[in-house]
Length: 199
Ligand SMILES: [Zn+2]
Image 1 (cartoon, protein in one colour):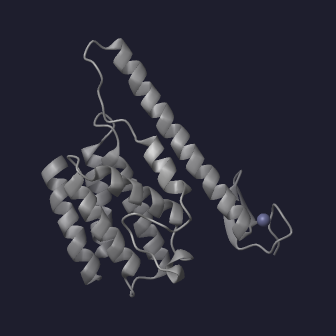
Image 2 (cartoon, protein in one colour):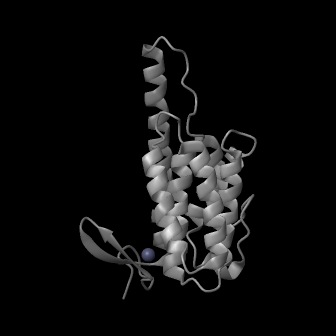
C-alpha cells in the first residue's frame, strides 16, 4: 500500500477528514511536527489570553505562563536526545519521541520550582515505563501519552490547572501500572506528590 502523500510504501494509518488514510513514516513525521507546532501555537494563544486578562484586571500579573520557548527548544533537539530521560536507539522506534520531548521539557522546567518534587517523580515514572521489558509497545505509547498530558496539566498556569483532571489522569496511569511492579512503585510515589500539591 502506498502513502497517501508520496510514492513511498505506507507505514501508518491516520484519520484525515473522517477517512482512514495510509501514510509513510516520513510523511507521518512531518504530520507530527505540524501537530507540535500547533500545540505551541495553542499554548501561545493561552498565554496571550492570560496577558489580556491581566491587562484588564487590577491584580497585576497572574504568572505561570506555559514556557513555550523551553518546549520549542526541547523539541528542536535531535529526535531522541533528552536532558532527563534515557532512551536507547532500539526504543526510539517504539515510543513517541515528541511526547517524550514534551515530558522532558516539563521535567527541566519544574527543577527548582514549587513543582520540583513532581518533576522528579515524572522523570522516574517516564524512565520506568521506557525501561519496562514486560509492557507491550501499544500500552507503553499509551502510558507515555498519558504522562505527557498529565505533565502538561501540571506545568500549566495555576488558573488553567484542574486538580480534578490531574487526579483522574493520575488514577488512569495508576490503573495501567498495575501488574508492573517497577512502574507501580514510582507511580504511587508520584501520586503521593500530586496529593500533597493538588489534593
Ligand atoms: Zn509519504
